[in-house]
Amino acid sequence: MRSALAAAFVLALGLTGAAAASEQHPTLPELERELICPTCHEPLAASSSPIADRMRAFIRERIAAGDTKSEIKSKLVDQFGESVLAAPPKKGFNLLAWLLPLVGLTLGALVLAVLARRWSRSRARPAPLGPSANGRAPLDPDLERRLDEELARFDT
Amino acid sequence: MARRMKIVLQAAAVTVVALLIGLLAWQVVRTDQGKALDAKVTQGRKPAAPVFELDKLDGSGAVSLADYRGKAVVINFWASWCAPCKDEAPGLESAWQRWRDQDVVVVGVDLQDFGTDAQRFVDRYGLTYPILRDKHNWTWGRYGLTGLPETWFVDRAGRLVGEHIEGPVSAEELDRNIRIALGSAS
Image (cartoon, rainbow over all chains, first blue to last red; front, side, top):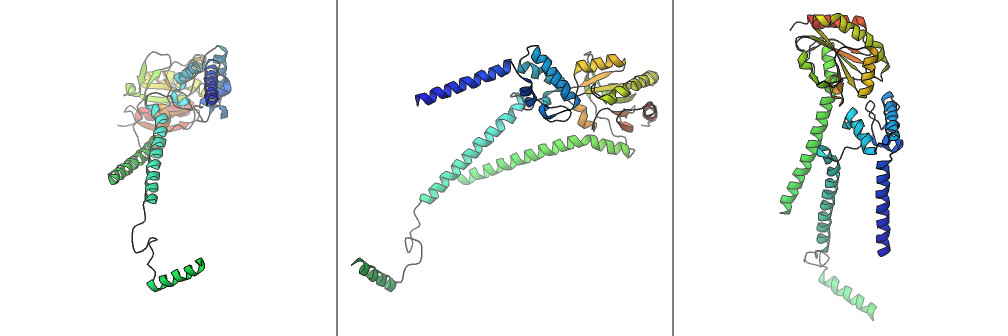
């Protein structure tokens, strides 16, 4: 248990470190995946339009100048608006795009949990008492007596 | 209680679906607005030009299309990276010089572009007519743009008239449509 926790901690630390490194020293392929070409609306990585080439040149310049990933994205948003970002920023109205799927998943899980509980309850409930325990029509008394006799013969 | 809960959940689900459909319809209508304008102008009707308010490229404030009411307006949509825009730029400047004293304004709307590149373009071609920056692509769908450059003509009453030019605009097209915009009866 202790070793699992330690492994998780080291993994989290590694991921945080990688994210920080990516923020401080971004690469062109990383940013190409996170940006959209404003003319063809494809990921920058897949676009060969003139403005996409110009954006790539701009990103290279800014990386060489030592800008962080956020700074480069912010400069591009200033030029082209937020639609240049592949994922909406986690603030204001755009926050809905991040929260709604989580809310949907949570609600779905709740509905499933309620339904599962209901099903398990209905299955655990005893069968209604009636003419016979298995709910079928009772055997004819004569037939039942003969059946008992036959079974008693097997027992002996 | 369970029945009430079920009704509430069903109502919530229906509301969410209705909202999503509404959002989709709004997006479709907004995108098609410009296409509808094109069809109307082709039929000889005079739809109101979508009124924009955009910042000037040189940063000296904003300009609204409504500011030009009473004048004929040539709206040219362009970007510095677009090759045909380079071909038509001298012709637009020339038309501006020919018509500026006759209640005509040429307005350039720069889209999908870096501001610095646009400014270099303006300096290189010596453009002196007002140049605006549409950073958020506001005009794209509303004017039914499908590429750059494109040009629309607006009459004194703020209505789209003449031809919607897709591609570089020629001197003849400019003069012909400016005359239509100036002579358009209210």
